[in-house]
Amino acid sequence: MKTIAIILASGIGTRFDKDKIKQYQYINNKAVIYHSVIAFKNNSNIDKVVIVINKNLIQIAKKCLEELNILEFINGGENRQQSVYNGLKYIKKYNPLNVLIHDSVRPNINNKIINNVLKKLDQYNAVIPIIKITDALKKKKNNTVIEHMNRNYYSLAQTPQGFKYKDLYLKHKINKNNNVDDDSTLFSNVHYIKGNDDNIKITTKRDLKYLEHTMNKEKKYIQISGIGIDIHKFGSTDAKSIKIGGVEIKHNKKLIGHSDADVALHALVDSILGTISEGDIGSIFSNKSPKWKNANSKIFINHALSLLKQHKCKLLHTDINIICEEPKISPYRNKIKKNISKILSISEKCVSIKATTSETLGFTGRKEGIMAQCITTISKPT
Image (tube, rainbow, N blue to C red; front, side, top):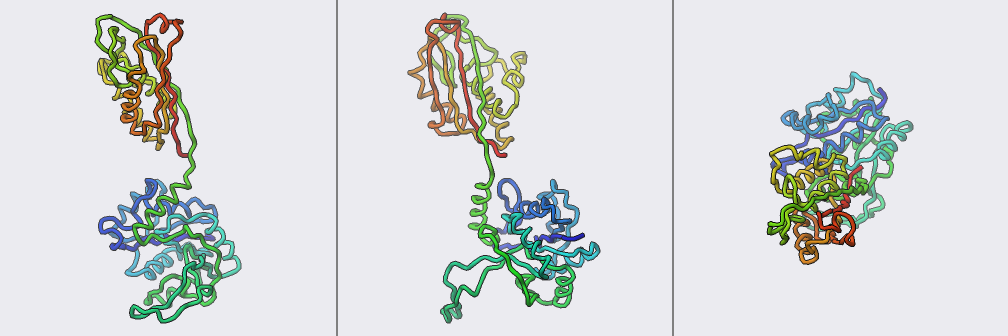
């Protein structure tokens, strides 16, 4: 094998969170360690990925990485250097040319840095990414600044750090009882490449929050709209009210339907289902099933929203048009709007309720029933 990546995840860092250590925190519904590992797993220049973990957390690690089919976990040592050495000893059987060492708590690593490190390994024995220090640099002692340093001579080191495997293995073998900050410390001649300011190491909860924001911004979304239409006819004339948009509206004619015959909510359900291609309200809630007899349409809405959540989509806006000669919708418009925004858990500004007549034409014009049309727009991750 030419290149093997060793991911270091054996630290316990209890100062960060006593209940869950850094590498098993979550960003975008995936563990931090998952983001770190998949960057190397998906890189075509990496032949194998092995992970050094705390032996007491093997089950947690496997659960976080189960979909990546990682089979090679190595027990870490008492400190970072021993953990690296354990990893180097394990991969000796593969006789790789190069090895990359990466901290699992740097989840925002990208292919550009990985590939640049590997490219330079064709010329050098040790390559690391670094970033500039932008703040003034001071040397301190006993709460006093004792020297003002020239920051132009200093940089911050990141991972992954790349090495010729045999050189790194030998240096660790010689220094296995020492504890160094990073592997490049063992080399006198280290080449550097430009790192990435967002390739930060999670040390505090503020770092985690920053990465949640940064990595979420990098996700790409598309907007999709779905249309829904529903019609219900009037029945008996001894009714007191009908329900539209979950709001009781005074009217002497009953709307006929298997459930509560709420045309606005039924159209809304179909429009949501349309955005995620999950069928229609009739295929999920059959009007032949007694279970849905006189059912509250809010049940149907909640199911559509749960499917939307499963697809990791976000509802952005819905526009409902109610078509009828009677009853008058305008007195109830704001109440319907407020109720639907509450059901959908979105701002009222994202709900549009319109009403119109058909100018006495067709079945609505003859006051035989009501029609509702709805267009819903969602945001879907790609």
